[in-house]
Amino acid sequence: DVTGGWYDAGDFGKYVVNGGISAWTLMDLYEQLPSAFADGAQRIPENANGIPDILDEARWELEFLLSMQVPEGQTLAGMAHHKMHDESWAAMPMVPPSEVDNDNENAKPAVGRYLYAPSTAATLNLAAVAAQCSRIWQDLETAFAARCLDSAEKAWDAAVAHPDVYAGNAPGSGGGNYDDTNVTDEFYWAAAELYITTGAEEYRSYLLGSSEFGKVEAFDWGHTAPLGSISLAMVKNNLPADKLALLKGNFISYSEKLSSTLQQGGYPALIEGDYPWGSNGTMLNNMILLADAYQLSGNSGTLDTLTMGMDYILGANTLNKSFVSGYGSYPMQHPHHRFWANDPSRGFPPPPAGVVSGGVNFNPTDDAALKVNLSELPAAKRYQDELAAFSTNEVTINWNAPLVWMA
Image (cartoon, rainbow, N blue to C red; front, side, top):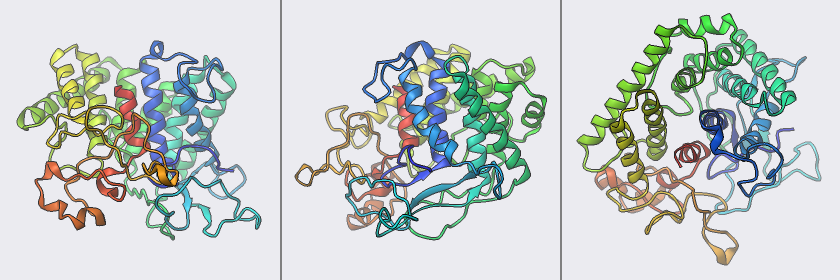
C-alpha cells in the first residue's frame, strides 16, 4: 500500500529521491528554527493535533517514503522502491486520480499505476530522511521516532549490501526516470544523518572517510552531499572541532563565490553558468546555503546576497516576472500542472498563492517553446508562463520546499 504522499510535479507520479530531498528541506527548516512553527497555524487536516503543522505536512510524505521500503522476508528487503506512477502520461489537464489497485478489476483503470524496482539511491534517501525524522520526533512521538530509526538503519544496511542497484530507463512513459548512477553523495548524506541521530562510530567513520565530506555547492535531488554538510554544520553533533571548522569554512567560501557571481550579472540571479532546468530551484537551494553561511559567520553581506536572490524570484529579473503565484504585480499564473490549469470554465483552478515555477531554462525543449523559437532569445529570457511549457513552467515539490524554507 503506497497511497499517500505528495504528487511530484505537474504529473501524478511519486518518487522517493525527489520526495526525500523535499521532506528533508521542511524538516531541516524546523530543526533549525523550531520556535517559528506552532501547531494549529496552518489550514491542514492535522491542525491542532499537538504536532507543529510543518511536521504534520512532512509526515504526509514520510509515511509514503516508509511504505516504499521492501518488507523483511522479501528479495532486497530493506531497500526502497524508486518510484510509482502511471503506465503512460496522464492527459493535460486532468483531475487527480484515485489511488488504484491493479489487481482489483473493479478498481483497475484503463491505464495502470505501477510500483517500480528498488534502487540504491532511493534506499539511501530513505535512510537519510528517516534518520533525520527520528531525532526530530523523539520528543514529540517516541513510537514514530523509533519506527523511523528502525527503517533508516535497515535501509542503510540494505544499501551497503547492494551499493550499485541503479535506476535507469524504466518501461512505460508515465513518469520521470530520476536516474542516478553515482551514489557516493547519497551514502555520505545518509551516514551524516544517521551519525547525528545515533552517534554510532560506523557512520562517523564512513562520513569522515567519504570523498564527499564537507562538500558545499549547488544541490538537487541528484547531488545530495551538501545536505549532509548542512546537517553536520547546523545540527549539534560530536565531530572533532577541526572538522566542524572545515565545514564552516566551506560554507563561507561558497557564500563568497555566490556573492561574486551575483555582482557580475545585470540581474541578481544566484546561479553559475547557464540556466538549467529548474533554475529557480537551484537558486532557492543556494539561498539555503547562504542562510546557513550567514548563521555561521554573521557576515551581513551574505544576508544581502540572499535577499537579492529572493528579489530575482519575485520579479527583479529580465522578464519583470514574479515566478511565485499570487505574489507581485505580474505573477506566474499558468503552471505546467495537471489540475492547477487555471481554466475555471472546465473546473480547473488557478494555482494557489505560493507556488514557484521552474523558471528560465537555457535549453527549452517543449513544443510551446519551439513554436515561438524561445531558444533564440537571450538566455535570461527563455521562459513562458503557459500550461504546455513544461521545460520552463513546471512546478515541483523539490522547488517549492526551498521556497518554504526561504519564506
